[in-house]
Image (cartoon, rainbow, N blue to C red; front, side, top):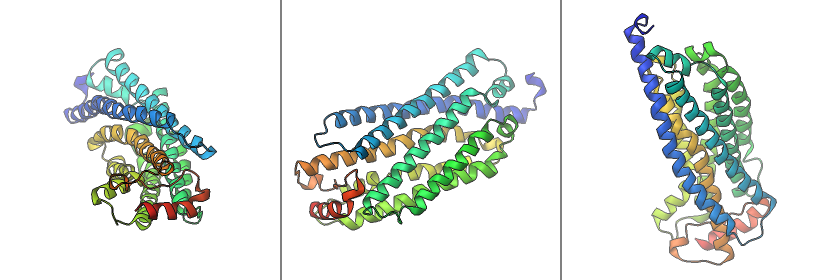
Length: 309
């Protein structure tokens, strides 16, 4: 069977099979870092002393859901790769055919990826809403893009169940490009709105500039935006022969989709605890006090953040 496949196609098949295997190890490494972060997050949440509100529990639930779905994605992908290399072993063409055929495992991973993206985008929209004093007009564009991407994400999952589309990658030109484009647009706009607001409220007075940069990076979940910007050229690539590295890049993007929002939520928890305990000092001046609930964002955040700066 292998001899009937042109050598040029075999080279392409080999590149894809290598990418599948490498992506598993990359995602395992990234999820190991994610698990360490979640352990820290759980310890912090367990030691929270201030009264928890409904918005607190919603954020806690969101980051736990992100982690659970990320682990489901990893388990599904690991099982699929093991199944391909062990249970369906054979020549290069046979293994490649197994991986590129639509199946239940691929459907599970696509659903997990779409759901994780929606939750992560929703957390960013919530953060914009809280920082801008419950001004819903500011969140109108990010929220619209979030719902828009969700709609096309559902279409993305539907298209991914079509075997012929999976092999030709023609579906990337329409559905996937629109989906990732709207997601990227939401993350970039939300990140810029958060960066501007935090910088405006805190300034740099009495603050170490490195702490300030770190604050802005964590506060705005800029890591998530950078990951999507890097991922976009790969996922919209229509040349099948050079499309294989997308699998490796995706194995980084999936965990970061959960890591960045988790860092943001953990930071807000620490901020609130420091505010209640009246912790001062230059080493902690980068920790702004922005509460989970946007109800008091305009009055509390403006005064507390400026005072801490």
